[in-house]
Image (tube, rainbow over all chains, first blue to last red; front, side):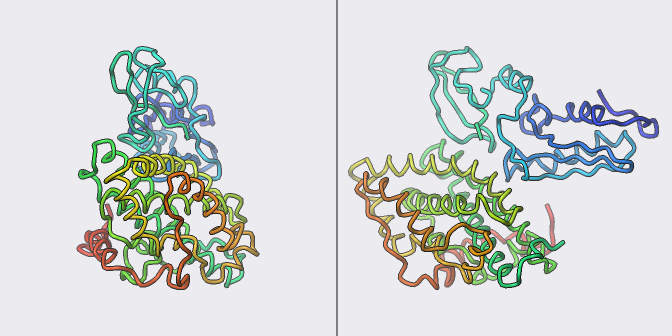
Length: 156
Length: 260
């Protein structure tokens, strides 16, 4: 769903805001949204402003500015000021990824955090090729059964 | 906005120095790691060192931001990170050594990551909440760095001949500065008393030694000696660092005030 066109905004509640946030993709793994990743900690719909607290997946995540801009753009239709903040009061952990998010990751060839099987063929005969990967949140693995490299979301 | 305003000035100054030490450590080792991008011994390590560098620079940025709020003197995180002469940096002398070969990098990283882990553990229940929250997040990332470097230390240390010889030589070169990360900071007692950090430098050093002792012992590698002069643990930087400094702020100096 998308926010109503500017000017058309009437009732705004937390559920409506969260539904819009569920459409904001992660810039580095666009198959999952920031809601799928469990990055949305609090949504406060105030009289004048909508305040969103997001939890960075990694401290040095370079996608945070892009996520902030995307959230502001998507919520602009509600016709209120949007305040996006990032905080560490609650640490983001990979356990916050939703069941739907894990499923989307798997179907796109990423092993969800903590899952020790190949997302391509289901084999448990996999090896860690590199603890680190193309982005901070990913590591590189290899499936000895289907002989394909794949990426895994790091458990943190 | 000033945070930590409720702290007495001496404690706030000590807190500023702790944050500066931690931020500069992460900044300098992050930049040193990034020098391996493209020329590491294998493709996996190009990726790993680049990712490690990104993590460390992210930690440094978050710590500089926190420091900017504590000192509240009009400088932002970038100004603190870049706009100082080389002698104004406050990183540990261990990180002053040149990149060297792969064994130098692994030895330096092992000594640094193990000491940093002890420091982070001592801050995990800090009375200074913004630091406690940030450290809670950083520790989860540093765990991977420690796993990575320990595996390499064991790989080099357990391979007789050139790999082990190079590692032993690297540990020898780093030995005089190995214990510099946990050296006492000015007025650190006030931080201990205020509950900002749990344990003074001597205690942290002892914890570090009990952590690395069994690993180095198993590999029959020497324990680092005590620092000859703890007062110079973070001063008097090397030519290698001056060269790195010239690299990491080149863009900033070429176009003052630029943002990207």
